[in-house]
Length: 186
Image (cartoon, rainbow, N blue to C red; front, side, top):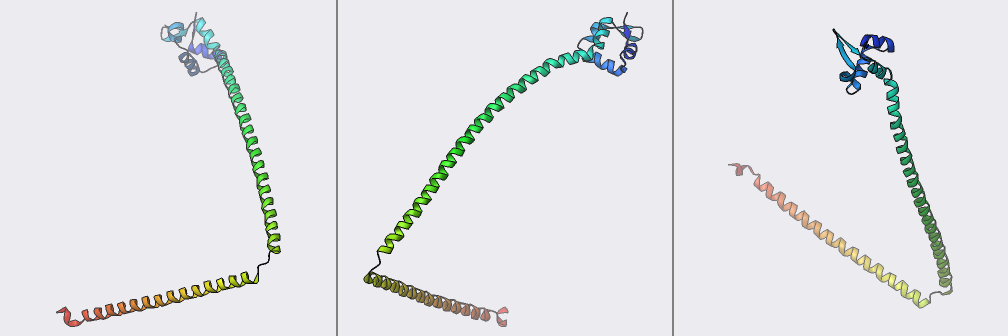
């Protein structure tokens, strides 16, 4: 003898809606385990057992899925650890290259300072002769006079340009005054 949905809900302490949801979630349950008596639906004993163990069955179904998820997570963790090791190795190589670069830079700076000091010593030993000094002062004077001449020429050119511009403006003003006379409007 089977049980009705109401009897099953009281026995399992679930609502009728929860029982209906369980019935609908199991494929082919209605066709295999239910039958109609008068105006109500009854569930056979095998169907009652299935609905009673529904929560346990769901948990058992979830356990393999959980194991699969754990396996996937372990694989992902393993891959990420390999990637981290590779990145650590790359960082170590870059750090080593940076250290070498810094050492080379320090050596270059030290060599430059040593060479500058050597040049200072050599220039102190070689004092320029008076003829060389005279030639250098003459070159400076020539350069200075050439610069002054160039500046003077530029100034004269600017004055000529400005006077030409002023003359042009005066001509335009005079022409405009003539055109604005009152008798031209007739």
